[in-house]
Length: 249
Image 1 (cartoon, rainbow, N blue to C red):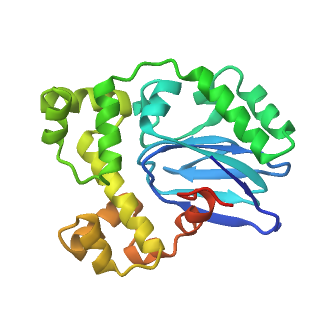
Image 2 (image 1 turned 180 degrees about the vertical axis):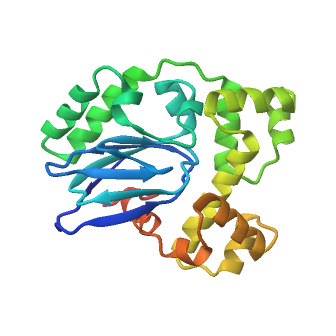
């Protein structure tokens, strides 16, 4: 989780880059709030951004928002099969269902970000009811930990399933095939290296791409832009601050 506060009254428009998670953004603004544009339509206020959402922009004066990144496994356990969220931006209320307004009101009434984070942990924890196969969860965890470098056949052998069964169960529960998941995780790793200022050739080699052209094609496929534009993406540039790998002291 991360909390964001934008104090300047100026209008902003931020391109959201594909990420290997389902992202919940709770709009806590007191003014006009946030508008999300995707696939020729827009959603105002709190929203879920699914896996592979395509070209998505968040615009507005932004004010305050709380962002929660859920692994596809956690999202499936909390909200049912992630296939319904893949490739979409959906309104918060449509996905959350009953109690959405009360949840937002509790977050707005909290006096600190820490209190808001605690509320999210409490409420989401009560929703983790839907079942996800242990084999599917293991495959996702291994894919993420390896930065998308493991082959599907090897992962199927690890969990004792056929490649066909793993492919079908993974896609039905997480909304994405194992191969596409690996590509997304690999892209995310490369995108963050680019945002950190690494050279394109070095990023391609370190991330497991055949060459720079391969990296360019994958970046275009996932983000609709070039590695040079990804390197300057504000959505990624703040990640080391908003989502530090080690606790800040």
